Image (cartoon, rainbow, N blue to C red; front, side, top):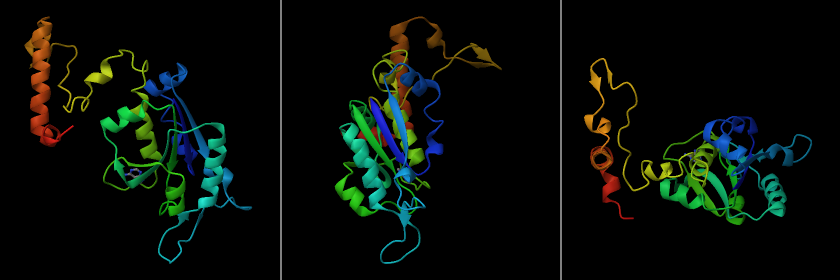
Length: 227
Ligand code: ADE
């Protein structure tokens, strides 16, 4: 999968993809993330990328032309399955959305800033608008990093154990069960006996029961929603 990200703060996206699972995904050639500095497409001597809003009001608006130039240059290189704008008024990211996006080949992400982007960008270029939750960040960069992480770990071959993403919280509309590692006992706090039993049928049954209980207690809404 190839992901291009357009941002006015490329520095913010230097580190998130250079560690752990996403680093390995890139080393294996399963994922390529390219960050593009919008300022390089800015207008005039000051490489302007934002301006005052028509009609007045506080805050700056990202201009259509630099974004159009940048997007059109990238679109000449590859065909995108989705051109995504990260924005708090987009569709809320969830696991089914991450699963669906992980099946795509080429994604382009646009990070908003200031008061957002000129509406004409959204009308004429963007195919999908995504929010990572009902709160406002100071820009779309951290949201883009979250989205790339959620998608990247799902690409076939990225996780060491191919099946492990299948057991994540939310994959079957259930939260994940508790996990333990050594020692068997710490300050009198014991690991549940069933996990030490070696009886895989019992362990599986216990995990299912715990996942269901946890979901019922913490996120009953997941059990109620239709697929
Ligand atoms: N930009 C600012 N806030 C955001 C959010 N919650 N999700 C996606 N992009 C954003």
